[in-house]
Amino acid sequence: MSEVVRLPALKRIEGHGRISLFMDDGGRIADAHFDVTEFRGFERFLEGRMVWEMPLMTSRICGVCPVSHHLGAVKAVDAMFGVKVPRAGRLLRELLHLAGIAQDHALHFFFLAGPDFLTGDGAGSRDILGLVAGNPKMATDAIALRKAGQRIVQIVGGRASHPVAAIPGGMSKGVDQAERIEMLGLARAALPTAMEAATTARDAVRRLHETHESYGFAPMPMMAQMSDDRTFNVYDGTIEVMGEDGALMERFDATEYMDHIQERTLANSYAKAPYLTSRGPETGSYRVGPLARINMSDFMGGPRADGLLDEFHRDFGRPFHGILAYHWARMIELVASIERMVAILEDDEILSDVTRVKVERGGGVGIAAIEAPRGTLIHHYEADDVGRVTKANLIVATTNNTASLNASVLEAVTGMDREEATSEAAIRKMELGIRAHDPCLSCATHDIGKMPLTVEIVASDGTILDSRGVE
Image 1 (spheres, helix red, strand yellow):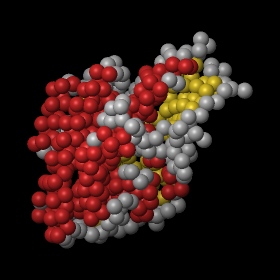
Image 2 (cartoon, helix red, strand yellow; image 1 turned 135 degrees about the horizontal axis):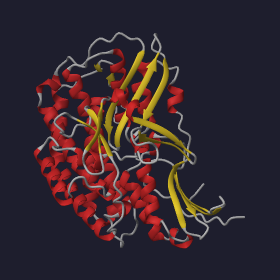
Image 3 (cartoon, one colour; image 1 turned 30 degrees about the horizontal axis):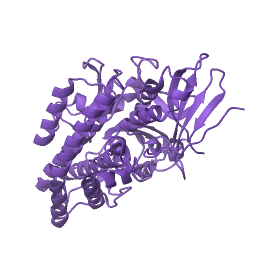
Image 4 (cartoon, helix red, strand yellow; image 1 turned 120 degrees about the vertical axis):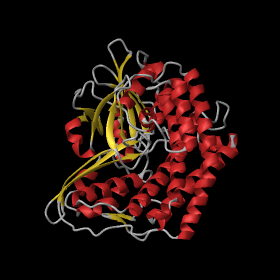
């Protein structure tokens, strides 16, 4: 019988996962991967429901990034029905999405990932309580940033979580002058705090690179949805793939994704592994999310964020593949999102009553993409003549990053023996790599109750030698 060692579960990830480490005949780690261990059923049980229900149903996939699924779904339904959303409706949707991204980035950087590198080794606890004890102002600023984003989501989306306002054809409601003034005040007040957060992230990434000098630099293509002028745009655009050398590899509309992206299933995980068709499953993996978008963007759309982008490119070059720089990229996006929110709210069109157009319900095919906080998100629906869904396919950001997550785990422990691989230093390094990507496992799966991370070490004959975590 194999020995089992149980330690407290890894916290500060969104969802339920497990690290599996595989040993060769010499007792050294030869392979490793990060597994999603709960069944993903959303695509199947969406079938049979009416397609106009998708924006509400898919927002329930995740409590951390429901706005992205809400808008990704409604954009796909718009495409199916062939409607053009009026400008005011589009501005409201973009505002909703930017607020969702801002609160999500603040949550991850300060509350989930930050305790790994913001509290210091002398902190009483490596979690948000340690952050509060070690730097009360930073913790207060983090709460304020998230609160502002959530309030704007609530005003525009109708609810602070799982929004309801985006409907096929536009938005079910607009905003009035009082709401506009409140949101503008929140966004303007958040800008100085966001700039401080970007400085904190920059300094933290520089320290992390000094401490983990060669960790997480494996080159990989990057994918993001880009605007025509290459300005940061999380709501709309054309999907592009940047090669390892920075050259443009592919460019395609979301409706053409099946010609460029394929998905394969994994033996030990319920998360799929998308890959570029042109390269095949062995070499076609890619990264998405803030690091990809910062590498691929020429402009961020606001003076403060443009300055931060220039500094990032100047410091690290372009493209930059170090995964720990996700943290700095995430805070640059936070600043850009807030600057764009201010610009939208200063536009008088935001007060227009024309927020939607009439929609003739029916069936067909609807495909759309949006840039979720963690990267490119694709929603694909097919419906019969009465609008009943016959097929649903969702490619979520975390599954796009499956290969990169696996690589970060393996790099942290490759060649180590069992004792070294289960040491506190090795586990912390694996956690650091995982959290840099900000995986949202609920987007790829669902679980009720505890959400632990388990590390398994498996011998070459398949025997489980060690398992650390909780059931």
